[in-house]
Image (cartoon, rainbow, N blue to C red; front, side, top):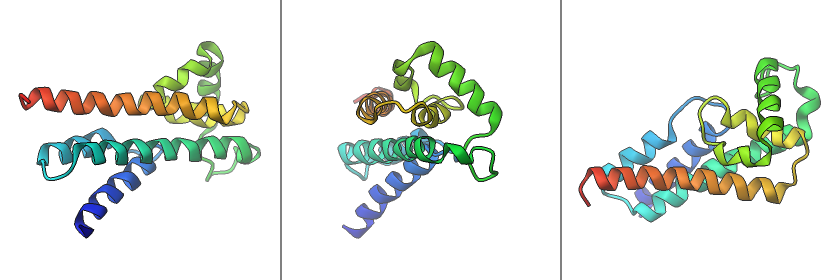
Length: 148
């Protein structure tokens, strides 16, 4: 039981970290655990989704409450990332958060949503839909690849 909690908790933590501008692939981690077949697919999907969504919420809070520190080295976005994400967000609007899972542009979008003071509930719903659907796609791809 403790091993299972460690696996699910570890996937949650890893998925959180890679949603906060730290490089990594939570899809690969989820896929590996699904392929191992030793863990509940539903619990793995929930762990990955909740961790990744929580990481995006962290980014939103950084954008919302810490934007005045954006010129500091520890701030999660560099100036060029910030400007690119603002342009993307303004061009495609709030619906762009459905793609918050996309590498390179997704994480900065979640920070920008905070800096632009997007309503948190709208942010949360859009990010949750996009990120959960991405993991469901990973699950479906692995399931079809395994023939089951």
